Image (cartoon, rainbow, N blue to C red; front, top):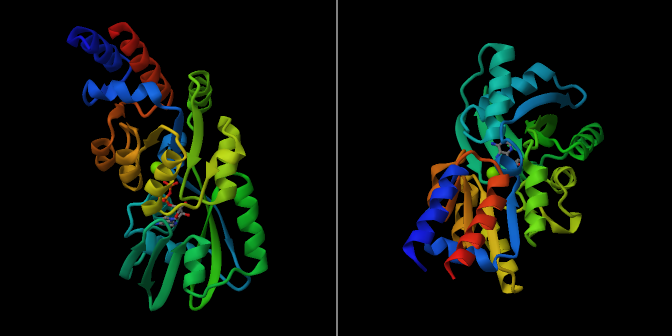
Length: 295
Ligand code: ADP
Ligand code: MG
């Protein structure tokens, strides 16, 4: 490889908002045939907002928002920020939670006003022996069919509320998926979120239902990449979160959203400065072309 051609390639990359860690990165783009895309913050904006709060019979909506908001106030997760901010906006202030703890990829719990409060996925609620009453099951399923995330809040031995949280698919994500396909790449959606939510988002951007891998715990994302590799695929991974770092490092080509966490950016081979997924397709096209020029 001539150094000049590589510099031209990387210089053009900078213009397109793509930072390449080193010239050796270009080589891995040639054989890549699969692109694994994280959902939250990669395909979607990652800026969550709280919509409806559905409560079980006998539970007060404001009480649900107050207790859930108090626990989430101790978490940095985008879902937590949406719930805590909405609670503070509506109630002025939320109490402080004691004994706060996070269960990665599942949710949080803490003690508020003497109640042990759990907020997160249904699997976490079940771990705490909290089951959803029928009216909340219906609310949860309706939210998920719409591509929203249903967050369960429970305390005093019962699941009492479903908080509907959503973010939007980025305007350029569908176009990015089209460009990836035209490069002969197979896009795969990988998320810790619920399967119904993941499918709704996949439909919006043109990813096949068979290529949706949902409800994957943060520590298992890397195992998904390894499994695809063991099937003979050459994998590019695009992600933004702390949760994605190991998978970005393990992939044949790691692309980090510049809008994401430092940990993800450090783990990636390439950074998409503007956090625009079309830049992922452009990066692969550009490096392949640069390689052709060199050889
Ligand atoms: P993703 O893979 O889409 O980036 P995460 O692995 O961060 O998602 O989280 C997976 C799921 O775990 C979320 O969709 C949510 O249901 C649940 N979850 C994680 N953290 C929290 C939290 N602080 N509050 C409520 N739910 C949470
Ligand atoms: Mg993410």
